[in-house]
Amino acid sequence: MCPAIKLKYMINYNHATYNYVTEKYQAKEDTYLSLKEAKANRWRCEKCQYRGGTFNKLLLHKNECHSY
Image (cartoon, rainbow, N blue to C red):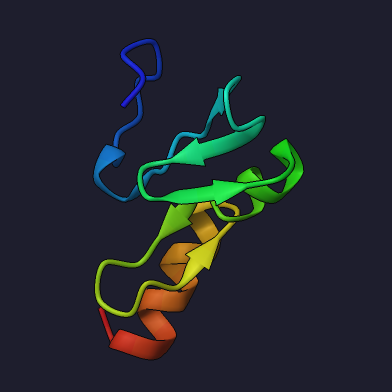
């Protein structure tokens, strides 16, 4: 995790960093070819591994699929 980013719900957040060796963006175990692709998959559901671009999309997914 990047210490400069302060988010309220950091547990579901995947921060992508650029790897100069592989020339790809990496977020934990995932790799992306572009920053746009990495931002589109920034938030992850812990139950079904759904990936969303914003926290609001993640909340909507949890309400519809998992009845939170």
